[in-house]
Image (cartoon, rainbow, N blue to C red; front, side, top):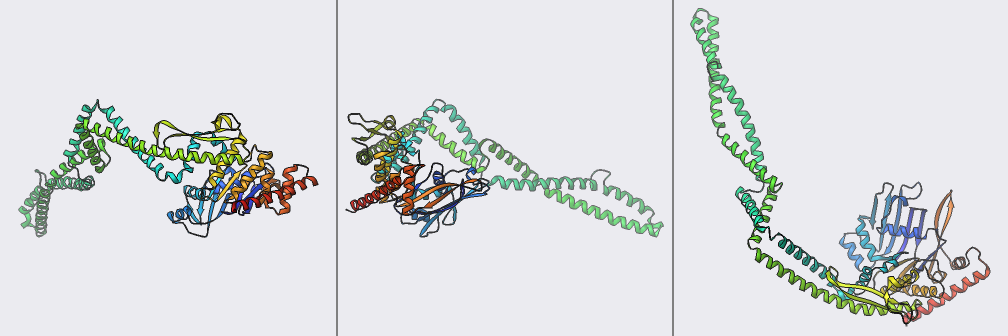
Length: 566
């Protein structure tokens, strides 16, 4: 049950708190006072689409908060599924920022809009002003019938959907195989080449990363080899190397070193330098001999990387993708090599799934036909309660040419509102007011089956007046005996039936329009009824009529409760 609503900075609503009661909650007010704006705030909290234009004047955010009673059932399972706090109450909040970003929370935890909508489906059913127009479309008829037949159908809808998806996949694969049949020789040749090329490469997972690392190491070795070779040549290569030049200089000094003690010392030092240069040259030569062994590895590594990169350009960005591509090509090749057998297997698989799907659809058709008989009679009885005289109503379940993921049925609601007239589709018969009553009849039928406790009706009474309005009010009160109902209405008959009555009004505050909502006492309810009945001028006679209407409504509700208890 919806306990309360808190709205702030939403359109022309500054801030309001509303505490709802059990049974029938009616909301009345002048046209344009903000009744539908209040419903828009509820929709926002429950994950509906809203834009920044709903922000109140000079406000940097809009807020809508709903508080529900938490009961056992699907809602409890949902909270556990998303690891949300389990409380005695469920608080759903949505805050819309000035930049268009919004944040939704359930019991204080941030959640996505999809989770909020799932929770809303367990808590509340909203019937807007124009929802009855959906009754003009056959898709809505199928949805409503399946909803009514949900318990008997069990898992059939899911099984049909899953089987249909498998059947469609098999049919598409067979169609593709037949289409490619003519070019399979050319395709086989290409597949053979691809599989052989990938197989011959002998690729290993992560091999490219390892080769890249080794390649960088070998590139550094080449740079070292080039520098060391050049240095070794400068020291010992040719006739003008350092060793040769030092030897010449030493031989010249040796000729005259005995003539000068200082020159003798220089000659000895030069001799040491010559020996050191020779030793360095020898070490460089040995080092180069060791490096020469990596030249072949470098060439092999470079060649291997070239091969891998070439394969990447053709079959995938990684070795894993290349190998996967090779496996897929091998599978295709095997299919083509056994093409006739492959096609035959596909045909058998499609036929098997077709038969399975046909059997499931047949079961669903029988379920729908049985449910259609029951639902059509219940709707007819509900329509009689809503002042449809001599009405006839049926639900036709007719076969489609081909199965769909919802079965093989087309469902259509048909009605005859006058004696002797044939049953005809709703779209060709019903007026706006009649569609509203038909939708109310549906809601009253489903109210006995649905676990959803709170129902909201936004001006479902459009196009209704006179005795029919009284019938609609009585039907609304009957629904409210088992569910909490919130009803935005202009009809005094419905307003008089309210267990709790709210008046929505619009006032000018600081030069701007502002919506206010007030819970009415019994005396104030009578005054509001007089306003609805009398319009601009409320006389004592109008007030007396309003008081009498309220008393009669109370008597009617007491009789209804006794009837339902009996």
